[in-house]
Image (cartoon, rainbow, N blue to C red; front, side, top):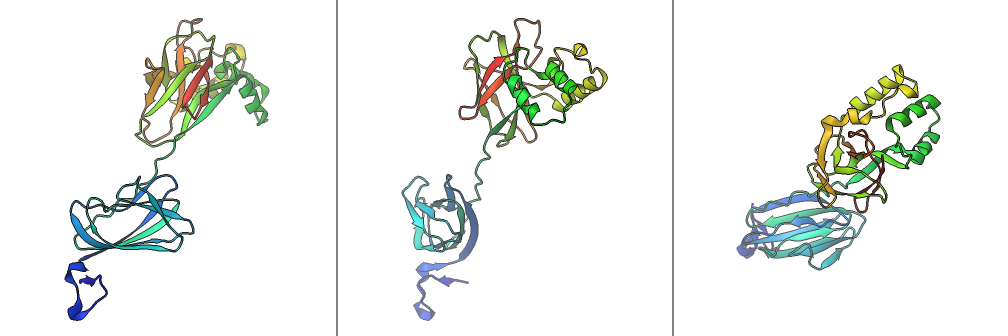
Length: 287
């Protein structure tokens, strides 16, 4: 059924402004990411556009390109226009809220797919060492003293430096390549290469609990425990720019950083480190 865009009827219908297709979609919009609402077209396609702001927040519209000047669409208000489509006919929205777009067009249109914002990268530090370990245990009094000492033997930094032995990607965009920086604290001696591992932590934790259950004496616990378990989880080495790349898939990712300890003959342990989220930098503190 043809819809008369001019509002006329009968013999007064202007067929040059009649539309064959009616499409409607609802879009979630975001505070810092322009969201495509109306597509541009490869050739002229006369159409009528109605965009309704159905939320209580101000949303801004831009025309022809996402970085063009923006115009406010007040809560509860609607944008209305007749245009000819074409390559400059795209409309974008920015601002937290929801928009409903209705488009009447002469030719078929494919409305933009909902572009969800990328999942932010969040890194959580794990396995505290030195003073950090003491603080963590102080928060939970259920651990007996012997477990504290055994934990220190298996996981703590030999140097007693306050840091962390592992990091977990608690939030990330799957299959996105992330670049992390690695810095070395002044005075720390280690032999390259610096290696990154994502080991089988369930295996490591099970082995730790087994050792604690059957060898509770600290003197009987191995000093290279982590080094004996990490071999299956190698991710990569740092490059000449002291960076490493990691493309996480779906699932849980908990990693550690190793290098050869000049005082030992093998990769016996993870290094203790701190992490700065703003620069995605791990600073290695000691063994």
